[in-house]
Structure formats: C-alpha cells, structure tokens
Image (cartoon, rainbow, N blue to C red; front, side, top):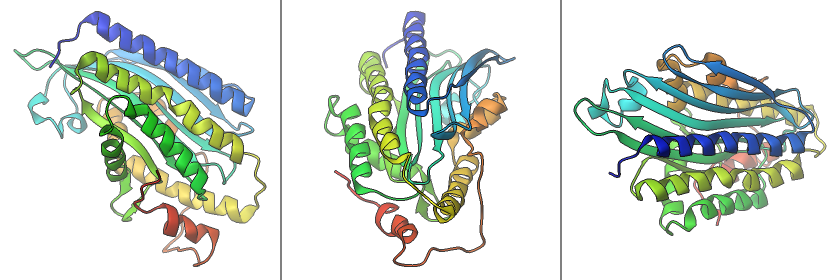
Length: 304
C-alpha cells in the first residue's frame, strides 16, 4: 500500500471542507433558506462543522456534516472487517449528508465520502477511502431512478467499467433492512476499505463520488418539490421514514462508529427525520401508488 504523508492528509481535508461548502450552497439555492453553521471540537481530538437546515420551504430537515476526528483506540465498528487493527490509534475525516424533503414526492437522499488512517503498533499506517450515495423515494419514478443511477455510474466509470456494477451491488447489499427483508431505497453506489488504485486514484474516485451528488440529486429535488399532495401522501411519507430511522440505528456502521468513538451526538443523529410514524403490521393495498413502491422500486433492478 502506498504510504501517505501529512500533506496528503491536508489535501483530503481541504477537498472535504470545500465539498461541504459547495453542496450547502447548491441546496440553499434550491430551498431558498439558509443552513446554520455549528463548529465543534471533540475532547479526544479533532472536531467538525455541522451545517443544518430545519423547516425550509423545500427541505424539511437536512444536514451536511464535515468531521475530522482522532482517537487512541479503534472502536469495534471499525475493526469488524479489520480485526488486526484492534486497539490502533486512528484518524478519520469525511463529509456525510442526509436530506429529508418536505414534499412526499421528493426522495430522501444520503451521501458520504470519507478517509481513514490507522497506525498499528510497529507497523506503517494503513489507510483507505470510502463513500457512496443512495436514494430513498416514497413514490417511485423510473426517470428519477435512471437519472440517479446514471450519475452514480458516471462517478466511477472513468476509473474502470467494473466499478459501478460492483459498487451498486455493494450499495444494494449494505442499505438493506435485514429485519424487514427489504431495501432501504433504490440504491446508488457504495464502497469502503478502498485503496486498490493507489492513493492518487483512490482519492480521485472518492472526489468523483462527492462531486456527482449535486448533479444527481438536485434535478430530482427541483422536479418533485412542488408536486401537489394531500394528507394521504404525507402519511405514507412519515410511515416510510420509519424505515430510515430503523436502518440508521440498527444497521448503519457510520452511526455505530460515531457513537462508539464518543462522537458528537447532535452531529451523528442529524440524519434523523423531524417527523415519523410507525404502524403495526401495515401493508398498502395492491394497485395503489404506495404498493407500487414495493413492487416496482424496492426490488433488485438494473436501472441502466
């Protein structure tokens, strides 16, 4: 594995800070409101910048978080795949976002790009990149799914035609609620523990994923945010948001890592929707648009 130096780490940090700012600017343009800025420090080392909007015209709740944190011992969630790094000092940085639109016809979205370094005792530092973006509609539109997956493919294609199919499969497998036996949404792209292209090209791949989020999501948000809806659609949106909460609390490694590493709870849980409903043993009636979400969209499918 190629060694990295502090200049490399600084380059990654500079990109992530700039990415956060550019995404916030694009989302503010779509919503018309402003994201608050909350800079914070972590007692064990490092800190971050949380950008949050609540009660916007288009975005009911959305957060775009940058963090750069350090620790003395790897938390369990980070060593499940790499047990040889147990107890090693570590450094992690990334941008993570979740957007919950107000309109039920506009999908929720998540994007994350990150860089990780661990330094086992008597060994050279081990580093890797991760990232991805996925879409969670409440009402399915084939043209939205095709557009989203086209951008996901473009984010990886120049690095090799094998990456999008591989990352799409990993996304489908990761964002899956095992206790419900259903996908969280229509997927996108997801990779982790990635260093196989060497530092420069692995960093470029991570950058590309981050830079394809806005052209992937904003056209869909803009198209759907003013669609007329009634209490029926709102009720369905709040019910399906419950699945999002379940995944983040039960299965999401990023949430587990943040809490296990004594991260800032407000920043970690800013992905939660502002309103949500649960029902006992509920299923939509066949032939309804709500049922079509299960039948036509929450299924394994090659959208391209």
